[in-house]
Length: 431
Image (cartoon, rainbow, N blue to C red; front, side, top):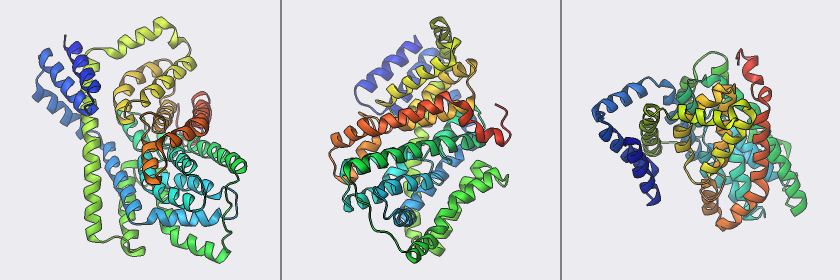
C-alpha cells in the first residue's frame, strides 16, 4: 500500500512538472505515514547518516573552488595560454578547448561548472575566430564531459558515499578514461577542421608564449597540488578540496589581485545557493533509498535479472546498465539518477563480478554523457544561450559527431577493465 502510494504521488508530480526533489520528498512522506513510520525517527536517521559522510564535505569545497576560478579570471588566463600554444594549428581553438577542459578538470569536478565558466570564454573566442556556433557549442559541451572523469570529481564523491568504494582509487581510475575521451575528441576536431577548413590562427612568438605560461602557472599549479597531496599521502581527498580552495583564494588575492572581500562574499553566497539545491537532492534521494531498502527492491530486481539470465554474463549486464543510464539521462537530472539508481544497481553488478571501482568510472562517464544528450541535455541549453546558436543546431551537431565518439569511448572503458584499473593497481588496489 505504502509503495503504491509513493509511486502514484511521485509519478503524478513528475507528470505535472514539479521538481523531482519535491516529488521524492512528498512521495516519501506519504509512504512513511501510511506505513506507520515516525517522521521524527527518519529525521534522526538522516542526521546520523550524513554526519558520518565526511567525504561529502568535499562537494561544496570543489564547487567553491570552481566558482573562484571562474569568477576571478583564473580560467581565462589558463585558456589564453593554451590558445596561444595552439596558434598556427588548423582547428587550434578546438584543441585548446579540449585541453582547457582537461586542466580545469583538475580543479572543479563538475561538467556544468566547466560549461558555464570556461565554456563562456571558449565559445566567444571560437566564434570571434570564425568557427561556426554549432561546432563551438558542441566541442565545448563534449569536452566538458571530461571534467568529472579526471579527478577531482563530484559524481565520484557521491558514488563513494553511496557505495563505500575508496574515493582515492576512484580518482586514480578516472585519469586514463579521461585522457582517452580527450584523445578521441581531438581526433574529431582534426577531422572536422580538415573537412570544414577551420582557421589555424596566428603563431605566438616564444617570448609571448613564455610570458603567458608564467602568468597562468599559479593556476596550473592547483591540480598538481591536489594530486600530489592525495597520492603523496599528505592529505585525504576531502582535505585536498579544502587546501585547493584556500590556494585558489590566495592566488586570487595576492597574485592575480582579482578577488576582493565583496566578490568573495558574492562567491560564497553563490556556492551556498548551489549547495542548497544539491543538498536537498541528496537528502530526498536518501529517503527514497531508505524506502527502496525497506521494500527489498534490489533483491527483487536481482531475482528478475537472474531469471532473465543477465547475471550469467557480466558484459551483457553492463551493456544493459549503460543503456538504462543512457535512457534515463535523456529525461531526468543526472544527480537524481545517481542517487536513486546506484543503491539498487550496485549490489547487482557487484554480485555479477564487476569491479566496484571500474563500475564507478562507467557510471560517472555515462551520466556525464547524459548532460550532452537531448532532450534534457543541459550543456546544449547552456551553450546555446551563451552563443546565440539555435538549440536544434547544437543538438544536431552533438548527435551526428560528438555523442557517437563519446559512446565509443564509453564502450572501451566498459569492456576493458584492465585499462581503467591500471593506475589504481599500481598504487596498491587489489581489485
